[in-house]
Image (tube, rainbow, N blue to C red; front, side, top):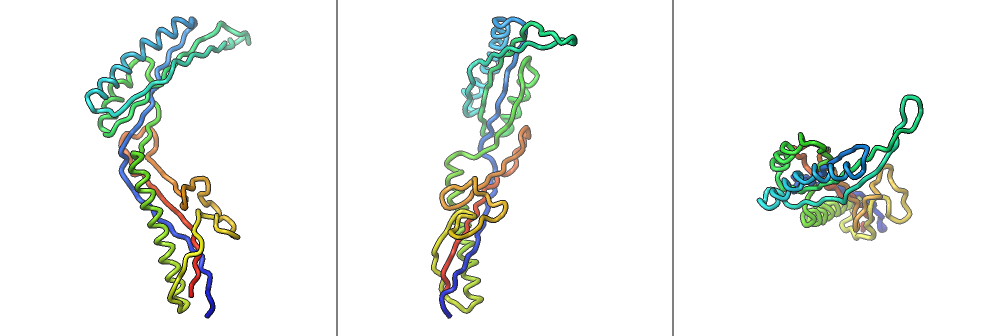
Length: 221
């Protein structure tokens, strides 16, 4: 039998517990006078900053940062359709990163009732080192699945050897049409990755899922 071209797909996924939780807290103030509003939001922000600095110093939080003061003005309309005097809005974002969900919950419980404080989204994630390592492992496993499938097809045809010719992200093999829903926009290296984390505002983290999908072409003989 002459050489047979075998084209297969390989997938693999890994589930990991989040290692970090980063939350954004916004402090807001508003009023008719710009200077008063700015002073007010700065005073409201100070205890929030002091609180997270104390936690970083104590080791219960890993890091924090804050944005510059943002101020904008709007002129509302009254019921008669007339523009009213400007209303000024000021805000400052404070971002904090925790290693333990319990410490995150304690901090949010402390500050959530403070004047002007608005609790934002929680981003559950891995450390960069863990993410890179696991993505490489998942990619290798996906390639292994593709090889195993190609060998199974070859064996079914009575062929004993498969030689890799091409490997690519889903839909990127030469002379192929991308499959519907192929994750082309999330390609990294020779695989297509996707990650799903816990929904925002849930302080009990769910697993992070890292997946890889590859397409490969082999010659079986």
